[in-house]
Length: 251
Image (tube, rainbow, N blue to C red; front, side):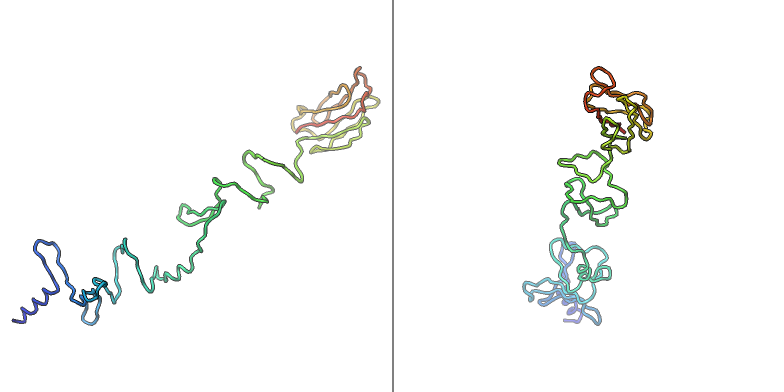
């Protein structure tokens, strides 16, 4: 047999071309198919002597993949994996610890794709012991507020421009309005001059009066006061009760 025949026979042991088949085979020997260069072995494809490992590919140099590495049905095992120049082990060690956000908090992503932690205002009831303004002078509720319980407060704005309880001689016992009221008895009459700071509605404010006398009414109202009259059952300026009264003017 000539040297050429020997060489062709050797090539046919490695390359198989079958009639009617549009692709060719590279055949591994009993131990392996070895891919090598002039000085280095690049890869081994194990043959039948490897038993269950037959067909395994062993690469001894770098593998550069210009496209994607798709492994839909298998895992990847490596001593070290580098991502963007950093060890994957180091990157995983520096990641945020896994946690579950509990209402009213929720995890999500913003429009830029950045992870964020925010408050879920739609699917939770806010339960807290304190609500305090951070930079403003107070907390603003920009909608209806329903209180299913008691409402306690330290101070609250009065709904009255002025409000007071007054005795028959014009002595004020209690002030309950936003401003102080002045009351002076008019001579021997059961009438009183009532004064207060100028009302924002001029003389068109609402006056509330109560008394244990039979009749009570007012006249001469201006933005800063009015005259209050108390009368008995005969419409005379005499007191049949104790002559006291309550007056309140709404804001």
